[in-house]
Image (cartoon, rainbow, N blue to C red; front, side, top):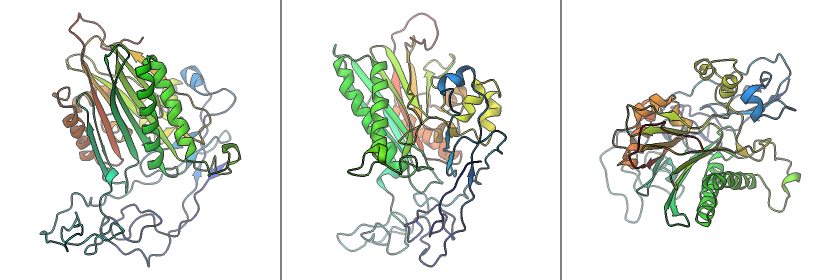
Length: 429
């Protein structure tokens, strides 16, 4: 039985004072200011035991080469380590317990403000102390919010919001939204959302690199007249290459990199392009795209299928969807971008909606709190088509109100269609 285990760290994984997650290099807790310099290292992590997937058939076999069992990575909040194939009869892997909720410094009660010395920055937590050059308050010890803790962008026809959530110590999600024009001058709108794999190294860098590379690829190919579905496929390949490059050492070829398969930077990706009356979606991993029609009497739909253990169980007919997603292994992903991914298998699909609606592109930090298409539609504000940024803010708030266990990222893309006769909300082309 194959097992993978993290090495023992020299610093605690959670703050002894408030149990906020920590990084090995942290000197103070970013939530409560606890001095970590005298805290002994934690005991060795429990190993992650490999799991064996059932025999492949049907749709699951189509996604997984027959000569090998599928490898999976665990990307559930609080999870660590990778799942790899095990011998038949191996015991199912156990999952770490959920982290204890800690106060969010961005929402903590603030002290009466005072003016720090001229030319210095005031702490956003206590509103009294001066922020030192390392980004910590000299009064209360709080780390100051990083730029990626909360991000928002709106381009009129598309908007996105990303938030660190209430449990994670950093935001490992990223997004890119943009607009361009097709050769005939008609508009094309792009939304890319990436979710860093928490058990991988530098997941925040992976998601940022993938989102940027995919967006740049689409902005280069769409104006040249490349079909949007082909352009999406090429964008995912470009994103994968960008993430792979993070695992390379300068001057060392990838095939000789001894760390290639050792917890390389990794992320998932999902994207949508609205162009020429088409809605094209592409993905690798378990981030999703939903369709919510403006006419809420019509049914919404999920337009992507997860690369995950749960989805494989459903596709193989071994579990129904409710059973599969209730299992502790549900979030073990079977597809991701990264140098340690077995094979890159981009998924793309093209639709021609016959009525106006809203495209919701999101990470599991949101859909964990609105999993079905009906639940997602119910969470989307009625005016989101007219106010996409506000709608994205409301959806992030929905996830935070639900517990905010993971980073949360959502992009909203209104899709307008001239009034036509009745028909299906989204037809695949």
